[in-house]
Image (cartoon, rainbow, N blue to C red):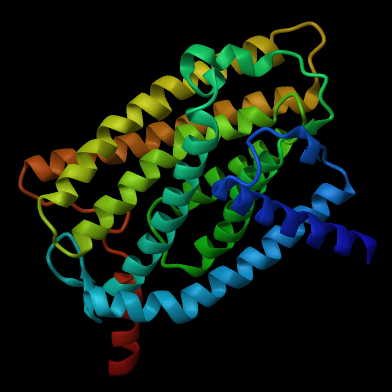
Length: 322
């Protein structure tokens, strides 16, 4: 019961601290209200509270908020496949998922820019080396725990959603990406590495915002906004994930792997970072395919979703006629 109480108090303390920070009642980086960054029982209890509350919140939103909103926006029609036919996934389902992901990634990106990118040199490629300066701090900023645990919770919950939502072509890649990201953020939860987790998020989430905006505009056939957001996505992806992110990995290997007294947990984090690069390359190839298809007159569409649900619809029709 003591751990449950500690988890609830820690979670509620983080929420109220962020509200006070936004209203100016407290200042950024106040270590007098700092929290320990470790993988102990109390941190696990706080993270578990984040997970439970966030899962309940997302369940409520997915069940009672997003369905009527998406039905209002796109109706009940089925999605169209690449040949103009209908697939088995209602467009409103895809629209709901895109709205859910846009809301999270937009909020997360905004908070990270506000808290870190506008305040610290280490948030930019020219300052990545500063992330690995030795720190003797036992405590970290309370707002840092909010962003780290909020992000970890999102991936912990949505990795389950991947099995519940309609299956895209990159399902296995998405599962691998989510699990690696959870491990990365969690292993970075130590005083000398907690800021690296924030950088990982800042190099990933902006592109996800653009992707979801492009998809929502595409579902509504809001040209040319779908094309504009997709072009911005195609520009941001190689800059953030194929240029800046490898620079970040270089610093990680320089300070955590290619050293005499390397630590297993820190080295594991560096290798997990490197494991994300092939996934980024895979998705960039898909982006290039969309560009080629759009240029050749095939239209702008997330090619991971092409043909989804067709087999299930055919199976149902076969069963009815049998």
